Image (cartoon, rainbow, N blue to C red):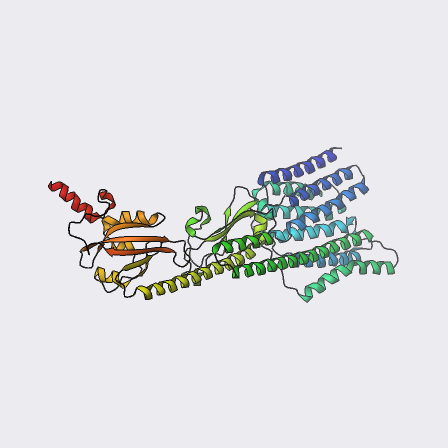
Length: 545
């Protein structure tokens, strides 16, 4: 009775620790850990029934534990899990299971037992140890994975030693199993075991397919050999080995079908997005094509928000990483308060075409971390296609603006009027030759701005005028090459929304020509609206009087 209470306490405490660890650390997938808790409960029930000498019911509980542990391991190593690709692991597990079956039946004994050691339990424990060992290799230094390995070693040792030398000391391995697996769920590193990873399909190899076929065919062949020699004494072991190899084979085929379906869906979605981006004529069409592609590639409930930002200056500060050495990354993560969700940032940067669209931008998606991880490569490709479309649109607009500037230059080449086309940041894109003649220079410096030409006292009012919207008139003083100033009247038109211009068209007129020396300036009552030179003269006159 006391032994039954001890086993019940160990099993219940271990299962409760696993459930508490899941609720506290909130891993990306809780199902594998809950299956592990169910396996611990099934094992504890088998131990309790064994203490009451109810071996038949105990064996059912132990077999249920094996099934639950197998389902747990399948969840831990599924597509998109920490192993990235489990195809080779499944092939090796199936081969190991078949090899152990042959060794146990034809080497260890007729009944599948070496003394009272159960071949089915030993095979299951060995496979468990192989899988958790592979997890430990994949995840590196992880205490939870180490504790899972310790528990698997404990149950393997007790499965072999306890039937040969019954006693409390030989049952220590089962105690280690309960304690180690409960502690594995309590440690924060348990989250790492279920973090999503980008799946990486393995190329098809004939030798691996041959090994898998041999592994599946081995249990029926062993059964046929035993039946040909008389009675079948290892039916349970053969059945368990056959079920394991069949489950592994089905899992292998399911993984292949799933990866193939995902690849087809990804290819179809990218092909449709590429066709839509090729015909996109403006950024709004690019945004619509990207959103349609994401709706095609992602589950509807996996994405919270999608934002196609066309300018780095409009990106939230937390989405912009620090600049480091080497080329910029193709994408990066921004952590979310909810561990199940994250923000993936795919920059719209293409280094060879950086001059065409230097503003950058990024595709920002907020959604489930596992879904974003599985489709990260696809989203990076989609962001690259969107960047190409935006660069193409910018280049077409630049060519159109150049043609428009050439047309304007041809029309007003010999005109005395001064015409200037400036961008939104006041950088001069085109200036008629009359401006250089007025300033007394041969040509304007490259990348010059309007601020470089006007008197410092007039730059503030000039900036206010161009920061607003609409057309207007402003008076300012231009500084000539010899240091003298000339007062001009600048009429500007706001054509930033025009596809061919995308800037301001400024027409300047030398105000001193055709006016008397003391002629009153327009808006003279409001001296603040006049150029700085006029304000300074007016102030000096007031001082004289």
